[in-house]
Image 1 (tube, rainbow, N blue to C red):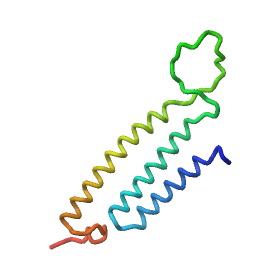
Image 2: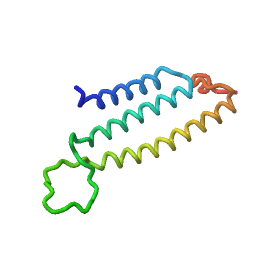
Image 3: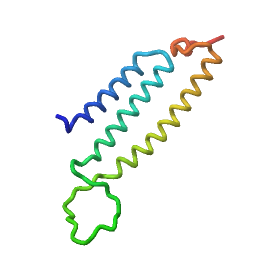
Image 4: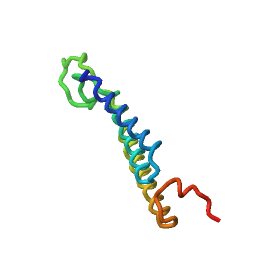
Length: 119
């Protein structure tokens, strides 16, 4: 059970984020829901690369005779997660900048009122 805990937590984060994005109308809360989904996906990616008892695949000057049966942790999910974190922060910053501009022009953060046509 403990070994699967990160997968359950990532499912909970993605579920809460999707629920927030589907049920809330406030643009700030929609942005928070998107961040929750991103966090759940990042946790899932890191959990995929975890190997119990594994070592980091870093080149060292290890002496001859070191056993090669030691499992290695996969570095690819960690690299993808770092990239996803950077892209997620940029996306969140852009989304919040749009929210500020929409609030200045429309005077509300309610997505239902913003969709209404003026004229």
